Length: 318
Image: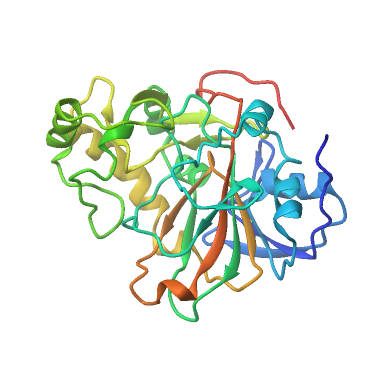
């Protein structure tokens, strides 16, 4: 049965970058909030593709409404039918609604990333529905991967368009540490990969190894963005780890400067969707609050659309 679209309350669309289609204005220096009224599902979808991150305040929808709303966007129908959800590594689920993982505190070190880069078809959309939020702490950070690409010089853009990222899912968070800026791991990645080869762990969700282009093109807007996950990245094809870090630094450090990052201070009832292939995100240290103070639903909307390299032309799916 086709999902029934949900009429969401008035919402705020968080503007990731001043862009619409292929017509660019000057990049924004910070995230802007623009109030909109959710009059129809097409308007909601347009806002999602235009802004990259959308925030809906004061939502009281139940799990069925939440799932139906998510399924109104393009997704892999077979994954839903078979219960094959790419965020399956979060074991606790909303009873009767397996798409929705139940989360509170996170054990992950803060790090800029996109989700599930190791898949052939990473999720295009992710969402959080915050049911309980601490008074202090627990913020989520967002930064535009489209803007990260636009900040590059023409020569750098041409170079970045050719780069291929190697990802190792089994080495993620295994014996690795994140620098305090949340961007770089220390150079023990070779040791971690060696350990992963010698002591392989069982992977239930996704392949062990994947190669994706660093720069991809969005099939809905035609925009190019940096596609990258710090936790899973080992190096660029044909480059050493050190060379890869030096190449990436120019793009990522500039794009995640404080003035270009939105800090989402959660309120109970907040529902946020972000375009996973166009937006970087990061958690923040959760030592400031108790686990009982935070509760939310996390969903990755499984996709059947492979990533598209920057050089490839695509017919708009919008």
